[in-house]
Amino acid sequence: MPRSPSSSVATSEALQEREALVHELTELVEKEALRDALVACESPMDDSLESDHSDEASEDVEAPYAPQPKKLLPAPATPILNHWNQFQAANDLSCVRDLVHVCVAHQRLRNHDLALLCHNLSAFVAMKTLDASHNQLDDGACNELRALLNSKRPRLLGLNLACNLLGENAFQLVCERLAANVSLVWLNILGNAFTYSATSVPLLRDALYMNESLESLAVSLGDFENPATSFSAGPRRKHRLAKDFVRGLGFHSKHLRDAQFGPTPIRKQLSVAALSLANAELSTVTVSELMGVLQQQPQLTALDLSYCFVGIAGARILAHAIDTQAGFPLLTLQLKCNHIGSAGALALVDALQSNTTLTALGVDKNEISNDGIVALAKYLPRLPCLTRLSLAQNHCRASGLAALTHALAASPQLTDLGALSR
Image (cartoon, rainbow, N blue to C red; front, side, top):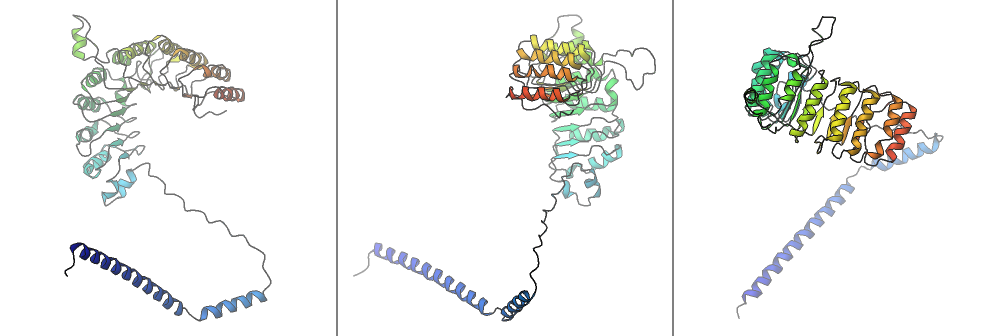
């Protein structure tokens, strides 16, 4: 009688299982045989050596225990914080292919050095940001700056050119590219030669009006003439560049000209969310204008006025805006080195009692006395939103540190007081 299909299938499955089991057993037997062969091949001298060593050890006097020195782990590789030397020494530029944040700062680079980097720009395939700050680049580097800003691969998202020697020509080029909506998300051009140039204000203002991508801008625009070129013994002349820039922020120059003969145009809400006017002296008029702009630009949540020397009067203007403006937009306010003293710092923290937005305040290096810090500490438990208050490089002594310690215990929301030192 012929077998049914079901019985044939069962038979084939049983055969497969049997073959798998036989294969597994064969492997086990081979492994066991290999182990036995290795044991049999061991040198017979091992036992004799061990016995000789044991005899010698028994004859010798027992030596005192000598502690073994701890073996330290090898030092971790030092991260490369600057890539200029690496770029110069490399014959094969594959070492820069995967760099996302390229730093060539503090290298005394001149225009021809930047030209060399731009000539090999295609090798930096992954580059998103370039830090070329604190070098000696000037207007002769315009072609290289144009290549960087126009590059599609790599496409820059951030560019730091702070503290170079860039003048009006380079600044005009940067503004033209900003107006054309390049890919930049942040730009730092603090501390360059155009800080005191009157032509810089309308160029930058119009570029920001046209731009739709820039979220963070750092630029120095002074209200007073350059102290390095002022030789007169009297008071310095007021250029009011920062005031003109702030007053027209959100307008195009054409609109401002038309406003002389008609109604004031509607201010455009810019894309910039973080603004720094650091490293140039500002007048109290500019600070007042800036507080008015905050009401018209609610997207502006971070403001840096470090080294602007606004003084106690400027701090009180800021405090008044914090206290009275409904919907005050700032989340972060940096006021490092502004000579605000204890009076200015106390005015600011007093205003913060009614503020529900500001989370970080920096008053480093502001000549705040120890008594001022003790008085300031009493306000901290009453500031529900402040999470960071930087008080570094002020005149804090033991009593000030003790007052801050007690204030921190009563202020669970406060997590950072900066690098305090006595």
